[in-house]
Picture 1 (cartoon, one colour):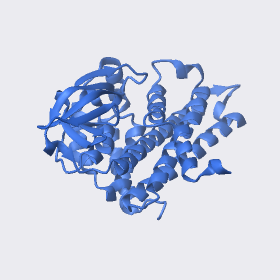
Picture 2 (picture 1 turned 90 degrees about the horizontal axis):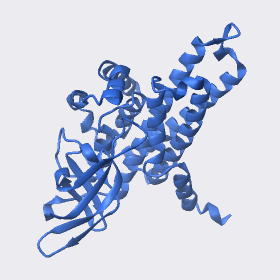
Picture 3 (picture 1 turned 135 degrees about the horizontal axis):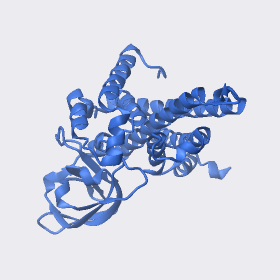
Picture 4 (picture 1 turned 45 degrees about the vertical axis):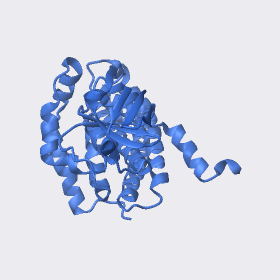
Amino acid sequence: MLLEFDADQRLWQHTVREVLTRHCPAALIREVADKGASTEALWRVYTEQGWGELTDPAEAVELGIVLEELGRHADPTPFLATVTQFAPLAAGFELAGAAGAAVYEGVGVHHDGNSWVLTGTARHVLDGDRADWLAVLTPSGVFVVPAASAIIRREQVFDPLLHLAEVTFAAVPVRDDAKADADPEKARHVALVGLAMTTVGACARVLEMVLEHVRGRTQFGVPIGSFQAVKHKAVDMHVAIERARALAYFAAMTIAADDPRRRLAASMAKAAAGECQSLVFAHGMQLFGAMSFTWENDLQFALKRAKAGELLLGGAAHHRALIAEEYRATDF
């Protein structure tokens, strides 16, 4: 497996960046955060670009390129939940242009003789409050149901651009043809890598903003970026990001190749991204100084997106434990 983009992938990355620079500028992100501006026009752009169709595992690297750039721009749409969490579970369902969310736990199902019945409550469902469809993972399989059939309440979180919801099914009947032919384990790998990619993109944006700041801010008549301590922190951030990025793309390649290492690679990518955001978050705030705590500073959006990526679907410690268990490291 090559760990460098080929010419087509570099062109794809350039194209995605151009689209997001034009249609998802910092001004739009600020409008969404401050005034709750609509993201429907941006969602249509993604649909027209065909990004939502990157659901074939063979296109995992190309999807990863999109997700990294979306993380860098603090994407305010339900793209991440739809393409990396809902779509892999909703195999066989053609729901082009619709937004979706995945319900991973908290919901049970039984058969009453006529239909399946979903009952239970799931918390922290990414974009559950603005999804058109829900893919519900139960002990008896995955069911794809309209979001309108559930009771959904948006939860308050630290990121004003992030949508998490509590989803409740109060004895909701579903037909047999609502059952999806999906592999939940493989679907989870895609979801983990999606979060890792998004976190890497957000961390890269933090570093970009930090470098711009330390080059322009002066102390004692010189840019603070010339101070050795500042250089060391910036280098540490860069190394952490590159390490997490390499693991994330390696995991994407194992998904594309259906490599049996994909299970470990997905956890390694998620753990590395989580550890990366921890270091980048701390250094980024310190190098920006008191300004990093202000609402007016757009640094917050990248920091909060990176932090959310660490917390969703298990943090670094959780995935490190999975890796250790896989290798029976605790036996030594």
